[in-house]
Every structure is written in C-alpha cells, then in structure tokens.
Image (cartoon, rainbow, N blue to C red; front, side, top):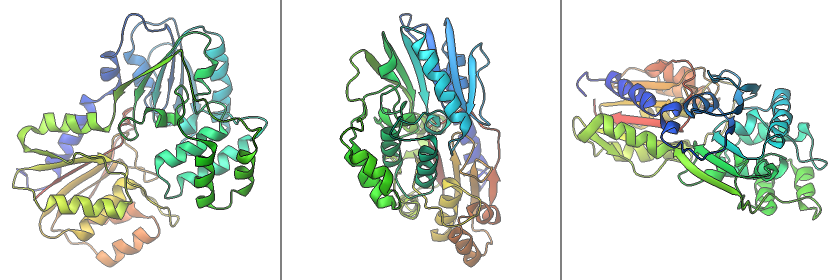
Length: 390
C-alpha cells in the first residue's frame, strides 16, 4: 500500500459504506405502482424509508441505537441483538398497521428478527422467544439455523406477517445474509418459508436444554410456518456481494475479490484469508465479505470482526495490513465497528490467545493495532475484510 499500512484500506471501507447507503440503493428499486402504505423493519429501516420517496402512510421498527427515518412515520424501537418487551410492543403495533391497510410495501433489513416479534400463541410465550433467542445468538449456529428456529416460534416471522395482508404484498430486501437467501433476512416475515418444524427441532436438539420447545413443535396441532403467499412478491435491493462489488469499483484494478462469502467458523475464516493473502502482489487489495460464526466463551467484549482480525494476525507470516469491519458500524458487543492492523507490529501473542479464550477480542485487537469507531451507519450488508501486503 502507498502508506505502508491500514489507512488506505480504512478509507476504501468508509467510501464503500457511503456508496452502499440504503437510501441511495433503494431509490433505484422504486416503481410507480408500488403500494403506498409502507412498513420498514430492521437496522436500515430509517434509511430505506427515507429513500423510498412518495407514500401515504408509513410504519418503522428500528433497533435501539440505530437511525430513525427523517420522513414522517409511526416509529417504534425494539431490542437488538436480544429481544425486549419493546420488541413485542412493536410487534403488536405492526400487526395493527398491516391489518388497517389493503396493499403494503415492506422494506426489510437485518436486525428485524430481534427488534420486532410476537410469540405464536398459544404455543409459545414472550419468555420462550427471549430465552431461545439469547441462547441461539450466543451459540455457534449459522444465521440460517438461528432464523429457522425463530420462524417456527413466531406469529410474525416465517411468512406470517405477509399472510395478514389482505391485498398485494411487495417486499424489497436489503440483505445481511447469504446470497439469494431473502427469506432469512429478519427471519422472512413476508416471504414463504422453505424450512420445516423438523428442521427447527434438529437445531434445538443440538443446542441442548430446549426439550419443552422441541416437544411443542412436535405436536401436530402446532401450526407450521407459511409455505405459500400467492399475492406476495420480493426483490433484492443489495447484499454482501453489492458491498464487495463497490470496493472493487473504488479500488479498481488493484482489487482481488474472494468470490464466495465467508460463513464458516472464525478460525477457518482466518485460514482462508491468510492462504489467499499469500498470493497478493504489491499494491493489490484482497476483498472479502461475509459473516463467520463465533462461539461466545466468556464475558469479554468483542465481535466477529475483532476476533477475525486477531486470528489473522496470529497466523500471519510476513508484512500484512488489514481492515476487518462491520457494515453497520457495530461489531458484536465491542462498541466499535471493527479493527485494523499493520504487521509487523509488537504484540503479545500469548495474551491475545488468552483474550480470545474469554471472548475479549476487542482488547486483543486494540493491543494489536487500531479499533475503528463510528456511529451506527444505517448500513447492514454483513462484514467487509480488506487485506494487503504491507
């Protein structure tokens, strides 16, 4: 890199977030015949609603700490990543809004699974949803598995919100999940669900300690998720591929994209990045994205990006610069967006390994290099990883 470190990589990261702003990208998807009643859900609800243009009535649910819409709307707050009482209050208000309108346009983004929900009554209660969500989020389960369970306990997820629409249901998705998996974003409240109760039971059994919930799902009287929504249509606004494509446009011929999204265990993710980084030529930038899984093992502060940065640094051989950052500006419970480093750099490898052992990747990343701080971006297209030979 021209500056011999991470500064240029960080500049590319910040330019990419601006290029992928929800308001900018959703405006390109607006068509004149879309429903005039609008529901926006998730971390990007504010930006998506701001970019949609003209409408008659609007409802938004935004996780605590994320930007609200600037335009006129009924706005509710909910929890994230854990469900709260406010999440269920928002769920009741959401159903009332949908029931009051004939045709509805839904703007769905990540974070919607926790910030708005209702239990599938009488089979489950609010306590069930909060307990299972907490255990799922702290596990090594992939996001698709987490959302599979959520769908089968919810009166909103798994297509059940879309089933309430009396007329036409149109959905635009700003995706924080794997390419093509639109029904996993916010656990698919308005899209048909391809998973089964049996799929959810398998995840719960692996999770352990969820026998009662699994037994309820086995009951034939407990309804399955929605499998067909004839009056519903969905389109993608953007996903992680959009994010990495934007980097490629900004970095130009220097960019070398890792074509597949990273969705494996965080240690395996570090090994994949390190193997590919060894092939980089001077001036090239390895561009990767995705969302590795991290198992919470202690009471430390950290997130996927900080942990991945430390694991890459621990395995690196020779000069290497990197930026590992979330697109939404928040990496787990770390309070930062991610981390950057330039190697060689002095750091205590044994201490870093100990910090990872108690899920304290923030402190380990801080000792290694620099923490990236910013306000919540209103963006949410998974994580971005940039590497270059220093």
